[in-house]
Image (cartoon, rainbow, N blue to C red):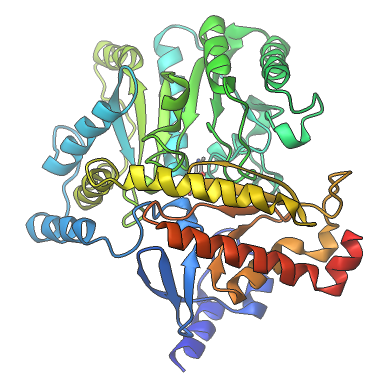
Length: 461
Ligand code: PMP
């Protein structure tokens, strides 16, 4: 009854993020009502293994008392403090210092946002300000990767390459450009790592040349592993090679760690794996384990200095600010979540469970519908194909993604099913070996159930 009335209220009033509005009205909302560890319960009483940690964010799992208590303590003490002008509060200051400790190299300066999209937008503003301050106002072109996702704000959605986020929105694409992503399974140059790296380096060099040379280009952005594009894992050495090329060309390298941060791929930040120091880094999601909204931009000391000195010379403040930047309650959640990842052993647990997850998904490559299993740590995907030899995808009319999602759900598993049928996995790091075994069992059952659907069997034949 409660759930029925919620479905009706939702249908009438709530506009959902990234939803097909009319189809959603027809289907009705799936209400999630509680969570514990790696599991959630829906309003109908079903218990589901959350193989996607909400939206790749509940890294610590649900119901973590230390985070909840930290939030409660902060709420008792101080519910809000602005960071504007010369104000501040203890938790955002401590969180900034902790992030500076954890981030590589001299990424020492932190600007807090409410999530990933405004973190990306903030990098664009800071980078423009930086090059203007350096007397290089021509350096204003931005380059990203095809299949990249960098949020859906009015500006930053141009850095996102997925067409869904452009259609109908008049995105400012004139200064936002793309090069092919290092997609080993479907790269026209084949799957050999060094060949893919060489092709990406060449693509970036020629894109920069096409835009008028490094004096016109501000920055190159990438996710160390592309998330929403389908969990695309570049070959080892790719991130480092691209970072080095950016340094050589004199363009900034921005690592978008919104998904890959906070233990998702193993280390606290995925950049660590390649031993690089990006010029700027964005983060969100796992920062608070999704318990409260918060994101951040980190920048190198040298970039901060240029911005700070230019502002001092101008006699004006740096005019970039959000009311909720560095919210003390979100920051308390962030400190507690990070304590769980590090001293609390969750990163270590995620690493162990991640090995089992990747090995188990690799074993599913024997399934007729699985073209490739890939991933690192607790971030993984199965690419679903209708023909393993030709790597052909299912025709969009089959709606294989939707069918996969609904079938997995019926089997007690929440996964992300991308439109083309790629299945994304990002379970909470707190998953035990038994949880991962269950996830794998339910995934195989989902694939078998799907193959039993005559429409799918025929299309896959
Ligand atoms: N960057 C990346 C890599 C992301 O995956 C996302 C969100 N999935 C964003 C930016 C945008 O973050 P948000 O949804 O918090 O605005």
